[in-house]
Amino acid sequence: MYVTFATAVRVIAWGVALAWVWQAVAALLGMPRVPNLLLPQYDEQPEGEPSLTVIVPACNEAANIAACLASLLDQDYGNVQVVAINDRSTDATGSIIDRIAAAHPTRLRALHITELPPEWLGKTHALALAARQSPTEFLLFTDADVIYRRDALRRSLAYAVKSEADHLVTVPTTIIHRWDEAAVLGFFQIFGLWAARPWKIADPKAARDAIGIGAFNLLRRSAYLQIGGLEGQRMDILEDLTLGRRIKKAGLRQRIAFGRGLVSVHWASGALGLVEVMTKNLFSAFRFHVSLLLLSCVWLGVFCVAPVTGLAFGPTRWPALVTLAAIALGYRTMSRNSGISAWNALLSPLSALLFMYTLLRSMYFTLKQGGVMWRGTFYPLATLRKNAAPLW
Image (cartoon, rainbow, N blue to C red):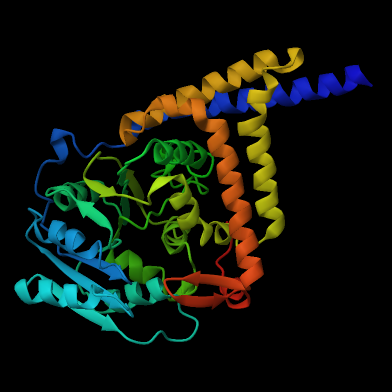
């Protein structure tokens, strides 16, 4: 019985090791193919200088909205308008937006939402409302806590036009203040490779590799209208990812690009702050299926935690070493664009455990509350499930 069990564990351990090696080598070879917008060829005016509307929804963002709007108004690209939406804020967000709009009447327009229609999420409603009023060739959906370097829009548009993109994600650079933030976010980007490979985003045949990031979703207005706008995902908490999947599913041209420092955002303070932020939305990533979330926790345990314990046992020591080396290679490859130190690979098992805890916490609180509390609004679980987009 011992030999049979040991053999089975060894086979599983080598299977995990080979899967990580495959992923790490694929990333090593594939990541250089993802465009870097900091290169000289993107330091130009977009061909035809297409019009762009930047849409910034804000709910209780008094601490961040001024800096975000200031960075957008300081862009060196001329053919751009900014729409800032005060979505039922109870703090000074609305007055800050009005003050800045009064100082820049030709470039910034303020919208104020006082009521949320039935079966709409606050953010998706705000985005959809502004998009309906923005006839420009391109739309950029962003968040109120994002900071833009002065040439970010120009470089992104230059690449979008050159590559004939219908949807472009310029990957934001995470602003990190503490070591535990780096540990969690470093693991998060490695884990993300299993969900969507950046070097495959532009491949129309790679159906599962789709991307959407709330900090920077740039779309042609024609593509946005072709998929029916956001009306088809009114109650989607992860509206950015679902939007990207709908774009890819429609056969439209999707692109991704890096550009360290072009688009920057600080997610939260410390590891526990990140846990708090992710608690509201991680369960929705599994479309509120308990079984799928639990399976993901098992996967994390086998692929990310078990290799460390495997170092202590003879039958699994070598595959464990191979696994950890492949994970370290993945960290090093991704750090070139993110700036998150590859040394965080040493903390990856602890980060995986924390991520598992966050998944379970998200599920627990959603089920306990019977829904999700987000930005002061409660969304019932039954309504969220009814309106959830397909998982794939």
